[in-house]
Structures are given as C-alpha cells and as structure tokens.
Amino acid sequence: MSPSPPPTALLVLLLLVFVAVVCKETTHASALNAANTMGVSPQKLERIQKYLEKINKPAVKSIKSPDGDIIDCVLMDKQLALDDPLLKNHKIQRVAPKWPASRSDDAGNQQPRNGATRRALQAWNVVDNCPDGTVSVRRTTVEDVLRAGSLSRFGKKNVHNQLAATAVEHEYAFAGVGQQAYGTKTIVNVWNPSVRNNSEFSLSQLWLAAGTYGLDHNTIEVGWQVYPGMYGDSNTRLFIYWTRDAYNTTGCYNLVCPGFVQTNSQVVLGGPIAPVSTYNGNQIEITLRVRKDPNTGDWWLIYDNIAVGYWPSAIFTHLKSYATSVQWGGEIVNTLGSGQRTTTQMGSGQFAKEGYQKASYFRNVEVINTTSYLVPPQSVYTSATYPNCYDIQTSSSDPSWGFYFFYGGPGRNPQCP
Ligand SMILES: *[C@@H]1O[C@H](CO)[C@@H](O)[C@H](O)[C@H]1NC(C)=O
Ligand SMILES: *[C@@H]1O[C@H](CO)[C@@H](O)[C@H](O)[C@H]1NC(C)=O
Ligand SMILES: *[C@@H]1O[C@H](CO)[C@@H](O)[C@H](O)[C@H]1NC(C)=O
Image 1 (cartoon, helix red, strand yellow):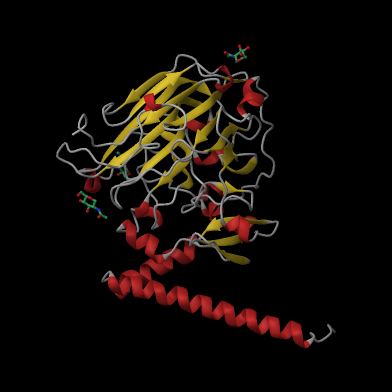
Image 2 (cartoon, protein in one colour; image 1 turned 45 degrees about the vertical axis):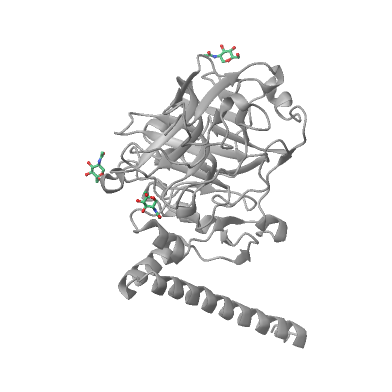
C-alpha cells in the first residue's frame, strides 16, 4: 500500500488541478470570444475544435511563453508526425548523422567583423524546459485557424490555390545552384522586416528541392519569417516547410501536419527568435544545417548546434534520392494586385549594396556534394523578381565569410512604384 500523501503535497496537487481547470476555461473562453467577434458559426467552431484535438497532441506539461505562445511538451512517440500513414511502423531515429568537416567551419563560427554578433534565443526556453523524452511543440489555437480563413488553407503555402492566386504574388531575391546535393549549411542574419498586412509575409530561408516545379516538386525549407496572418503577431519566427507535390495537397509549415519528426525538447518550430539585428548595431545570426543521413535517407535539421529532428525519407518521392537544386534568400508575398508593389520589406528592408550592419546576409553558405564533402557552392546564379524593389549581390571581399551575399529591400519606393 502506498503511504498517504503529506498535507502539503495534497495542497500542491489541489492547486495544480485548480490551475489546470482555470487555464482550460480561459483558453476556451477566449477562443469563444474571438469566434463571437469574428461572427463564426457554432458549427464551424466545432469543426475547428475537432481538428485541433487531432493536431494538438496531449501534453505532459505546458509552458506559457512570455511571447504569448503556449508550448506543449508532447511525448516523442506520441507526436503528430507519426499519424502520417507513410510513417506507420516508423522507428524514431535519435541520432543525427555526423556533420562533415569543412575548412570554413571554424571561420564560420568566428565573430564577424566589427560589432558583436549574438545568437538568437527562444524566450519560452529561458522560462522553463520540456522534460526529457518529450518534444516541444507550439500549440495551435482556434484564432490561428480562424486567421487562415479556412481549415484547408491553414498552415499551407497555397502557391497553386486558384482562389487565393488571383492577387497573390510571390517575389524573390535569392542565390542558387543546380546540382546533386545531400545537404547545406549557412549562417543567416536575422531581422524583423515590416509586413504590410496579415495576408502578406516576409521570409528568409534555404530551399532543398527536386522534381518538377508546379507538378511533383519536393522541397525542404527552413528559415525565419514574419507572418502575422499565420501567427497573430509580427515577431520573427523560426519555421520549416515541406511538400512532395508542389504545395498542392501535401506538406505544411512547422508541425501542423504529420511529416517532420521532432527529436528535441529545446527548439520550437514556429516559435519566435529574439533578439533580432539592429541597423548599424548588433548583428544576430542563426546557423542552419540540413543533411541527408547516408544510412536512413532521412533529412536532418540542425539549428545552431541542436539536432531538431528530421524529414523522414518516406514522406518524399524525388527527395528520397537527393536534391537537384539548393537556394538561399528572401521571399515576400504581395496581395495588392493590378501590378502594384507592396511596402512589405525583405531582409532588413535595405538594398544589398548597403552591406554589413545595414543589409541582411547569408554567409559561409555551403553544400554537401555527392562524395559527402561540405563545399562552397559552384556556378551560383542569382535571381530577383523586381530588382528595384528587392535585390541581391554576392560578394567575396571577406575570405572568412566563404560564399556570401547581401539581399533584400524596402519594396515600394520611387524606383519601384
Ligand atoms: C492537386 O491535387 C488534386 C487532388 O489530389 C488533383 O486533383 C489535382 O490535379 C492536383 N493539382 C495539381 C496541379 O497537381
Ligand atoms: C491585405 O491587403 C489586400 C489588398 O489590399 C486585401 O485584399 C486583403 O484583404 C488584406 N488582408 C487583410 C487580412 O487585411
Ligand atoms: C566533393 O568535394 C570534394 C572536396 O572539394 C572534392 O574532392 C570531390 O571531388 C567533390 N565531389 C564531386 C563528385 O564533385
């Protein structure tokens, strides 16, 4: 027989139950308030709540982040990823493949030039931690889904959604290579560009892709973004994306659909990162690495030095083998239509020629080649949709930065009307 609990333990327990009940009530109430003010029917609300029950897996612990998010600590083997029928009987991998050595790796970790560079952090992780054996997941709320307009649009890029596509234009400034690649590494400068309205976003990311654009394109995408329509605020957030059918029916942002298997309890995908760089001031950076495991074929994500998890080989078609293109740079969405340019900024909101501490950059960009070497990209092309709005310039004046470029811009301006 187990000993009866001492009175203090009992009190703590009662308090916890009370807090849990109160928290649940408040969340429910605020969801209802939001729904009421937005004129949502009870039927729709019920559909959304059913959906959320499916995607928000039960948490062994939940943490309220100072930036407003709720982080659920979900048992690793109960995470949403495993609901994917392609991952039936999937054995969760625990160890990322060894990262290939590179001559530039040491240089890549140096402080760049004048002005201190610091790492971006996630605020929730400073407050509290998720226990071992769990993964840290940003909880999706009713408000998140309502902002997306519909369940089918929630968490998706909708590149080919004909309804949305009438006015939606994606504009880019990026560098890329076309070659067989098994991964990439880059250090990315972090900013907080302003975004004109909730339907637009600004992001800076890497793409690993294979297949045919618009048909069966497979992509793996990682970076930072500002997307008020998705997250409900203008914070700069870490994000991932994937698809295996050119964004048609598969894939999503972060962990809101089955697919990406998380293995760590320290990094929240979709969570804000802070601080960000300031004009003429401190420059903030993150290091992103993606590598295909030579044994399992899974694509691992390493954020700074933390193995976050992986995109299982099984969720892809072309990317089961290797990537045929790798790209790095910025993308914004413009919803104005009729040939008008938006004031949504890309990167820092400054043009590439402004350079260090003003324009945003990617540095020490490398790819993993067919013989598993991490090497600077060869025969790089650059592309900008409207160079008078957002542009890109590669540079080589600082050898310790390896292959690097500045990119971005203010959007609408006298040269970009
Ligand atoms: C997208 O998926 C739907 C449903 O599977 C299919 O009917 C349609 O042809 C696909 N569209 C494209 C562009 O692949
Ligand atoms: C954003 O601006 C576009 C173009 O003016 C408009 O159609 C759209 O409704 C706006 N979105 C929101 C969420 O305000
Ligand atoms: C990969 O890079 C290494 C190091 O530069 C080089 O020796 C090797 O030939 C490259 N492999 C291929 C297939 O190009």
